[in-house]
Image (cartoon, rainbow, N blue to C red; front, side, top):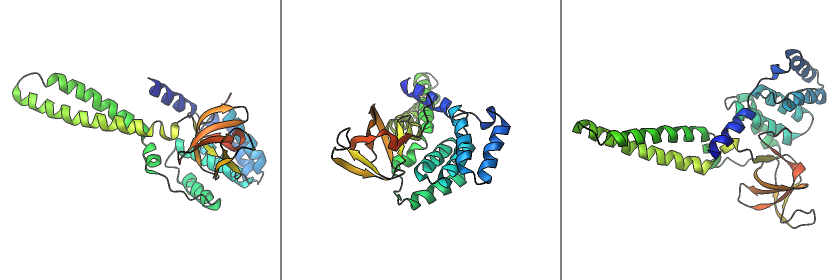
Length: 246
């Protein structure tokens, strides 16, 4: 139930359309961008974010505005948000790759990252397979014998899919929909052994690196990096991929 609740929360956070505020406001933001008024367009787009009227187009446009304003980290962040809502948005994918290359972050996604895109599918397959397994198990004790053998085979196959799907779901967890997944948006990001600027560095992080937020204390965030390192980073240098609006 906890996993289902987390997924539903993430899903509800990522629905909506910019036109819920008003088509004229959306057009105004787009007009500002096309006129080269990138800071003005950025402010207009952020109003939709504050109103939780999320869409792939909104985050794609906001990513473009951040990039034109010189903030590569938040451009990457918003392209990832756009792809979370629409994995087939090729423009966002192309821009994301280009900016990651521009900032020198060409880390290839891990197998777990790739599998994480199908986190919801693993849960769905495991759920379907479980019920098939349960029904086939009950029916396998019936008659006639031919059907009994058939249902036992179905029971065995469904059991394997259930175990595989459940194992994969546990391995990838929520994938990119993890509400604690965040992105490094600042070039000078140091992971520290303690929540202090004077603390010794664990490692240097690049713009576009992912971290998992474990806890927060004042201006500092305790996190785990993709390499498995634990440490503290200034909260202002990271942003959650799924936005949390007060």
